[in-house]
Length: 223
Image 1 (cartoon, rainbow, N blue to C red):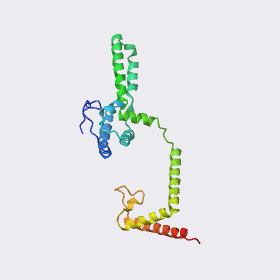
Image 2 (spheres, rainbow, N blue to C red):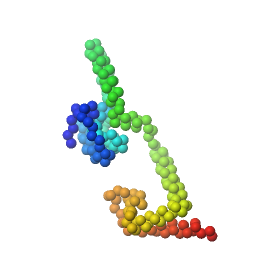
Image 3 (cartoon, one colour):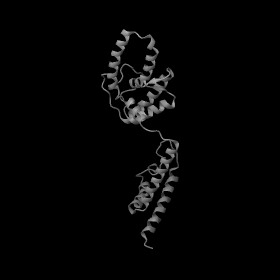
């Protein structure tokens, strides 16, 4: 997939709006392109990424996938302002007064352009991610426990409600009538690549519904 670096986000060409699915498909190609590009350099700057990444990619989830893929593949991302500062320090003792005046003018122009670039999707994404504290292993475990506890409380509340138990029983009827699929009931079966015995899961569902029926009758009985 050929790219023209000049025709970046500052181009006058109107940006085509893509659906989330189209952005997800496009980013797969971009990930491979950037990984290949990174192998030719020691690092990639935020400005380079903003310039080369298609302007149509704006979804936060897609940018998240993109940045994570670069990180996993060892791509180093730097802020070009840091590289510029290092270059300025290297040239400190070899400065030319006339050149310095010209550089100051260019720097002022760059700052004004920088204000416009501050709204680039990648820069906004990195700024947002930098403000979020990363979870520790203990924090992840604690959140997982809270989620599990919350799910159990939801199930308990549903089974204590006549409306909830009736809805569970209706799931079995809709399943037998072919109105819903097994993967719509059991978690973890949504992936098309996941292989499972459908009849085995149908049997499990009816067994669970049988327990719900017994509980429902017991709850309805005054003695």
